[in-house]
Image (tube, rainbow, N blue to C red; front, side, top):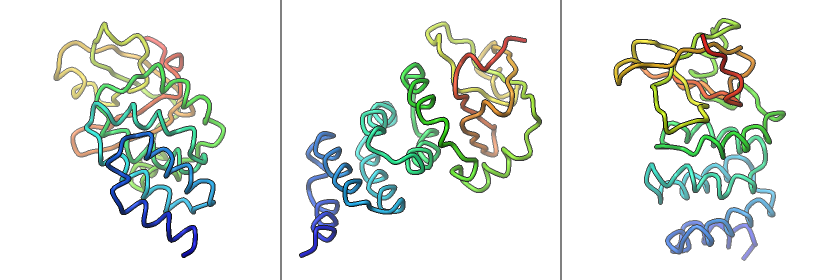
Length: 184
């Protein structure tokens, strides 16, 4: 049996239930085998399915260093909206480290199109939350931000946006750094 086939069996087997350490080993093995982006994204999707929304952002941080840049950015965009209370300070470091490899086409096609249509300077809104000193995640719609109370207003250049996630209800963006949002 080939090494790639045995890796495929490990992915579909019980190894996924043995904790993040085992999942990291499987992902590292796929990376060492030079698996293509699609295989790595599928493996990562299976890993992420094992965790709830509060655990997912930490899981992603635990394995992000294993990922090639293109897979990191695609996986980041695919998973960000499923993260509940991500540790923005830690993501600040991860995004900054990978910034040179960012490409708009790593976002979902609809999100990439929405990103292309953005003006060069954005007006941003965020729920007032005294617990979060590092704020990477913002909304583009003031009304959506104010639904949960007073909001913080800022502006940022489009070039400082790491991701855009549009839904029918709102458009959320993630900045590469909290320093890129200037108070209004």
